[in-house]
Length: 267
Image (tube, rainbow, N blue to C red; front, side):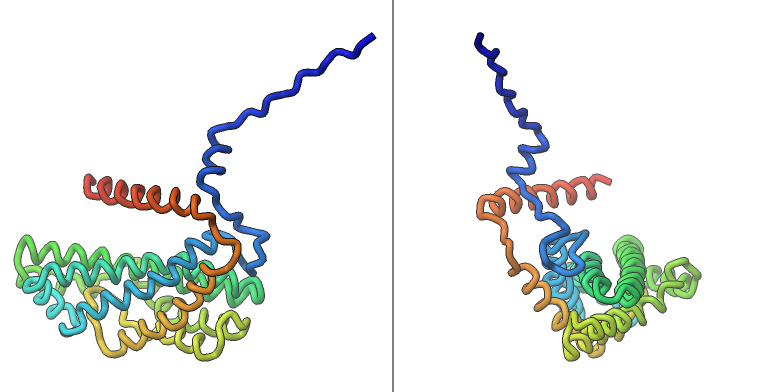
């Protein structure tokens, strides 16, 4: 008597499985990198490279104008494209710093939880405050366009000292980078020279419509010296994505960014 033949089950390939195969994403844990979690080494490493460089470029573009807000508004009236580009690059670089800081803080936290927590939290709250300042900068420049530099300057002057909740984070802007730098040095995430360079970022002027000073350039140069080499080293680590994965991810990322810009402009 023969045994009945059991039919072999055909594996079902789901849409999710196909997407994971076509657009592979590195696992956030178990890859040998201390403290590697969200946002991962690719986002974090890329942010470490481009964030500081964008901020430094924006600061250099507006360096020839006096740093205080009446002069910044007057400069926008005379050179709107240059100033808009400078402030946009600076703001974009500040936005990119959050994943960079998250990865650095996680790496510190894997060796010293307290330094990673406080350094990362203070810097991150400070970045939120700078994003708020960037929004006010944008509004002030639009007042120059619609009403002229005189009324725009008067409007900024009238509200310059007004209370807002983000003003409570000014101390975080000033001290966060120092705490993060000390944590990076104590845990040997950064050597003493690059940790000191990271701490220089605390000298970057804060507030609304602040232009560029020599101290700004020193602070941003220190930020670049600290984070850019770390980001490049992170991106060079194995395993690396296949060429096919890169050719899929790059166009998808560019298309997504383009759609985000278009949707943002649509309101």
